[in-house]
Image (cartoon, rainbow, N blue to C red; front, side, top):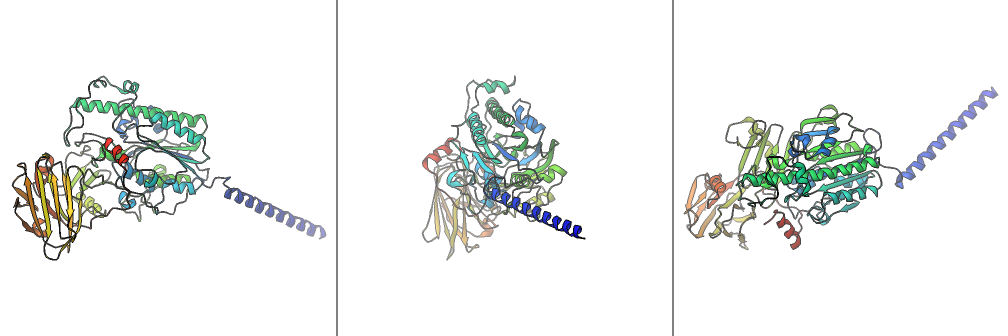
Length: 606
């Protein structure tokens, strides 16, 4: 019996010692954790969190990559990554220009939610970005970005420990790669790095030797006279000029591809590639006059918002796949956080793509603003009226709230978006329109005055007065081109327009109360303008004569408006639309003269 008691006592002491050692080890681990000696993050598979390399190639069209069907040898290195990775056939950005697009994929929010919609916009402090969340989860965060409006006080790229940037065109793809390698070499692990290549942004200036790498026999001489510059809006320049632009663009793609290849080679040599997830995408697409414009920031057709999306991480996704389901930029942040195991308490509109990759099953979109198979894109760049589009797998709607123009496309039968089906009775058209009606600002309440034409010698003056005790509640212009001045009376009872005909110019205004009547008088100096003002869907009034209108008389887009707009014929059109309240801008910054100069050089502002 004594032996049994001794053995039991010895066993008890042994267990107690083991518990003490275990507790001591746990305390040591916690101290190391707090000291930053062990990584905080772990992936969803339980392994160490991977490094993340997010490569954003400015204005990169998917169809200029071999893995998406390009016949030119533009992308051998990207194609290799896609061949062992996950390629998404239908990926879409939420804007057709850089700043709001970056803001969306770094926050997983739509432009109307984060409010970064124009050059002066500032990211709200209340919204956390992807680098901020990853940094809170133990990542070192790095970036190479040189595009105006993203860094510094604009706060779109807040959350990076180290951010390298230079004015656009002062750092080509080779220098960007050099900087990325230097940042990675000198960074703790795990790291997240955002690399923004801009060589594919207009104007295209590839190293000359790259032209021969992508040139085909039927291409024009790249070194011949460039011919005409930018065509008039809506006009396509000579085909030789378009072909030369496409050749220069393709050479830029090949240049960037080589530098991506050099970056991947560095990851191989340093044994980082197996523990690094590489994501390749673009901030938006690029147009070559498919709809009357080149470059980007003018419309929301597919050439402007469709982007490549490739995820290369064989350690986690062992089998290469091509996924045909529609995905969105807002899905990027939840996907990265899912794979890295990083915790996040912020609201995100996107959904992780891991389920779609692993099981070909999309995550349910409960509680989200739109269903997961819808991509909402917005354009508020001041050169054009606000635009909003919703893209689904087979259908698409584009709405221009300022003018009430609606476009509806079957993108399977009509991938070029050439035949507007809105005039036809269609159940799916109503479904898309109902979805769009949920978007703030998609249907603006109020009056519009639109000036069309291209004769800058013609001067137009217009005065709008409210009737009785009514007052103006909003007066603002929604298009930037041309010479147009607005002057609102101090008591809010009237405003004056003085303008010269230069493209499309639109002024929105609203009244309080909403059903107030207005008095309108338009005068012209010059002979270009017709002798009438087009009011409401079918009404008219004479130039120089004051006319009083109520909502019923002003209701509806004038039947002549589209004809005048498309042909740049001179005209004045006035109408009223019902709908939601007009959107208001968020926090803004004032651009410096140097910033404005750079934006003009890139064609973003007048």
